[in-house]
Image (cartoon, rainbow, N blue to C red; front, top):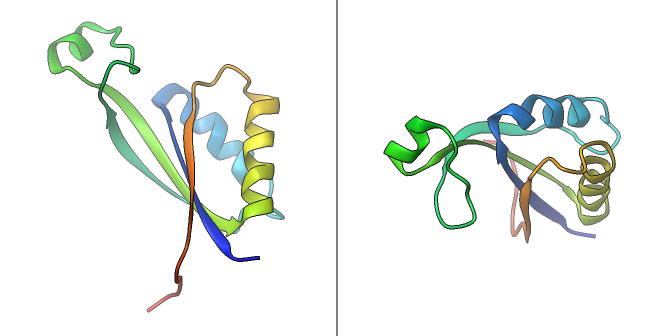
Length: 100
């Protein structure tokens, strides 16, 4: 089975919990990259005054690669441990992956 890329975007206050879950499962997650992001659009609630002024909400994005089965297991793990975490995700196929 080919590898896929799982991208997770979430509120900053949820990110540490998700990272802890990922780190607790080295059998599913070989590693991941986390970066800051900004949430825009009608599906992103703007709550804080600074968010209302700037028009976006701070987010964290985590990307990880692995087998589709492992990435779906990661989604199940997050759903089980953080059922109301408000994590948006997508899975895409990886054409090629390597290290230079």
